[in-house]
Amino acid sequence: MDESRWFKTLKEKYEAGIANTFLITGNIGDYVVPGVLIVDYLIQQLQEMNVDRIVTFNFSEGSILHAGKPLHGEEGEPSPSYVQTVNGDWANMLNEMKRPIGKSVYIIEYPEFLIPKSTQGYLDHETKKRLIDLHKMMNHRGFLDSDHMLIFVTQAQADVHEMFLNANSRTVPILIEFPNVEERLDMIRYLRDSSRKSIAWELSETQFAKLTAGLSRVHVEDLYLLAEDKGILAKAMVMQRKEELIRKEFGEVIEIFDTEGYSLDDFTGQDHIKEYHREAVIQPILEGDTSFVPKGLLYMGPPGTGKTFFARCLAGEANINFVEFKMSKILNKYVGEAERNLEKAFNCFKSLAPVGVFIDEIDQALQRGGDHDGNPVNKNMFGMFLAFLSDPSNRGRILWVGATNYPNKLDEALKRAGRFDKKIPFFAPTDQERVQVFKYHFGKTGIPCTIQNYEVLAKKTEGYTQAEIENIVVKTVELAKRKKYENIDDVLVELAMDYIISAQNHRIQEMTEIALEECNDLEFLPMKHREKVKEKRRNL
Image (cartoon, rainbow, N blue to C red):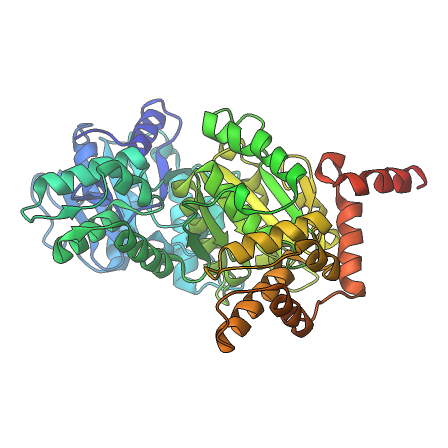
């Protein structure tokens, strides 16, 4: 059986004497190779390293010997009470690990129930004792000098008590990532070769592997079994089931969007911004030269100016996955739950890469928090987010896009260089852009249009956002169908304009001014605003 990437890392660090305690997290509920789950895989790989004993332990089953000598009892004879009460097994196992004799491996499953993160600082007496006993054992000279290995297996680091993960800890975390496209392709071929049922394939194996980005091998198997049941493998079926699986795994935190067929040509206006994105984001991603692709893009401006739609078009043209990350829904009343959910989300983004991750109203979704607001969870999550955002290995693979009406309320740490430092304003369209917006949306209605003067419509909608113009088009179509009109003319459009009320007010103007003030690169401004901003900043 071939070694996985993460097991090679574990083996190298162990054999080099760097560490003998490991925390395996991430995609632990998946097959490591087709049909083999993680603990079984660990046992098989460790047996090939010629260890004397492999012992698994969890709260439910106690300790179980899988290879070599028994954990306790006479030499060569298993102890009659080998699987016994938790306390007895736990104490005996800790004592065994202190004896630097032989080469034993101890795999502890579900450590979150043995050494859990404290809830509001409270731990019961038995849990405190386990924490102290284990920590002392891990720092005992007998264990440190031994060839023993201790492996914790849990879904998230956030589940384990912080004393085993801090700077003084000897625990080395190892992340099992979701399978990449090649690994999913191997799983698909295994399923196809081992299947005894006939399936009508409307996708190629490569297309199926690409569509399952973000899913585990178990999920791929689930999709294949569904295809066997229906007798067909189609894109719509895969996408629907994928959305169900992602929703089941992450709740309402992550929403996946299909961007096939979208491009920046679908976004009318803002040509200077489209040019920047094509040259600095899209082409580098398509060509694989991601060294200067921004880590984070911050879209600023009033609501209705197309920030969300632009992000979706960007992802479609760059041919990358696109998700909305609803971080405000990740908080949980249970301590550690929010951090665990955030860690799972990060692992999901890695598995979807290359991916655009969109955060709407980012100024509200990402707040530092801290001691004064009584919510340390926000502070922990903010720190986790900054660390992940700053990871250089994610450049060009995870493209963060934040949208806000009030960028001045966003924490300054998020706007530093290498984070959301490309601050791009979105404004209501100009006269000529409004003509384009009207033509684009009327062209999608499927109803014949005999509009004679789009320029007049544009003049009468000065200050309207793209969303408000779209509302006018929707209202026009509604009126045409209600009144049984066979086509749309200027009179009908102007009637719809009389009904739709623009949201122009002092707050919209305020948002526009704030976006101008926050912009730090004149390339992102329309020509009419550049001199105004230069003059204003010269007079500061």
